[in-house]
Length: 144
Image 1 (cartoon, rainbow, N blue to C red):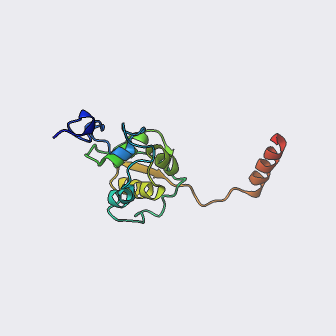
Image 2 (cartoon, rainbow, N blue to C red):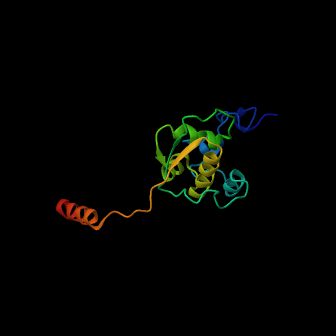
Image 3 (cartoon, rainbow, N blue to C red):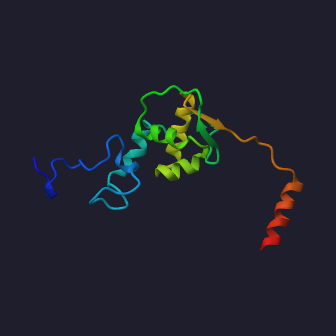
């Protein structure tokens, strides 16, 4: 069957193994906004889960690849996260770079942590002492 534009298949121009919404630029003939059926993607990627398995993972949580992680076959989104996390990144940065919803990214990072692919560096709940806060305020006033 021949499709408009002389192509043999409508998705022939898509990069193999990369889902269309993970591309950095839109496919030819596709708008910047993406497909019209994008509302199902987060639900499909997370298998319907809306809350991550790990309450320690927030948007500022730093994530890096676990040094002893065994290479396995991963879905494209998880593989992209593991590839990005060669250097420590926050969950928010991962979400922005992959154009994934923050909630989806938190769930996938939690899954990868549970599977032993990622190390999650959780910050302690210790607040900085008041003197440190005052030094920061004085420094900000000095530069403004």
